[in-house]
Image 1 (tube, one colour):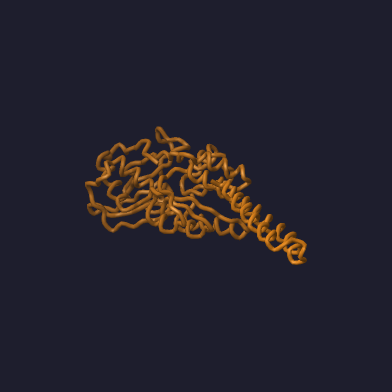
Image 2 (cartoon, rainbow, N blue to C red):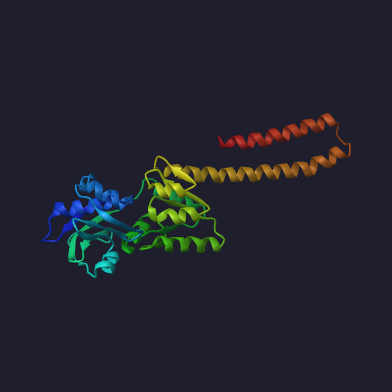
Length: 286
């Protein structure tokens, strides 16, 4: 994620707005916070106190005696009662709007662009090709989520979701008998990562996401997961083949050996050959 542009209100100082936003986001590990810190120069020249993080919505804090709010339009509207102009220049359905405001008015609006991770499209195609359902759950705006889902070919997508709503969705899928695997990197993903049967956190994600995940993808390359899904499928098939062979062989060979129709040494050779066949079949994975 990166900052595409910043719209500063006419009566506001751009550098001061960036400093306020950076001071607030210094207390957050969200990817949006990192994007704003990168854009602002990372080291905040101001210090924010009484900081309160509202997962999935925004962050608030006091700077120089004034309380500022930074977050979604709904978050700003709820805490300040302000309305945001929907006709800003340069806005697009693919951009996420993050608003900085105090109770007196809007300070600036960050337009953030979500970059699709390398290998995401390939991973989705692999899963769907294996008849697995793919679902996109995001706290981003509905238009942004729709655009990303369309690019990836995901038909089941949901935007503006809180951590609780994500958790409810995963719980509902589990209740339907689904085996759920979740990939996430943010604070808002921690509950669903903890709830899923299999959970993978990105290495560049926040610590709380990695804490609740079963696995951490250290190189942040989703191509590795595509290879893992393919290997897991091949492994399951070979396990079924080996079990089928063992059952069939024993159903046939044991009665023959017990009846005395073959010499003990020949039965021992047959059992050894059976084990070698299982081992050889498993070695095809390498």
